[in-house]
Image (cartoon, rainbow, N blue to C red; front, side):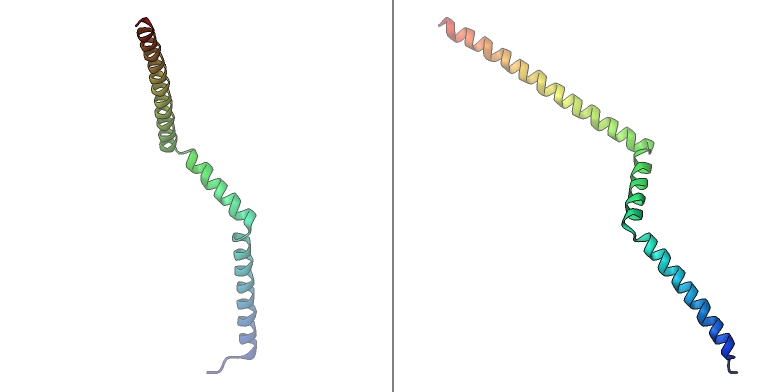
Length: 91
């Protein structure tokens, strides 16, 4: 059964409309500012995750501990060198 020319034209118009809508949506999704906004929102959501915050807090505490150990060892070594210099100067 052959289709009526009007049915074919309506189908073509509907398909064109759907294609135009799809192209507009693709253009919007690939817009650099939209991509940047989406990445920013994802990063903010990720950083607000309680588990991520706990991991960062642990990393911060670990770094602070390492810096404290380094400072302590530096002062200890400096003190030991001064003691050694005093012993050597007495000879």
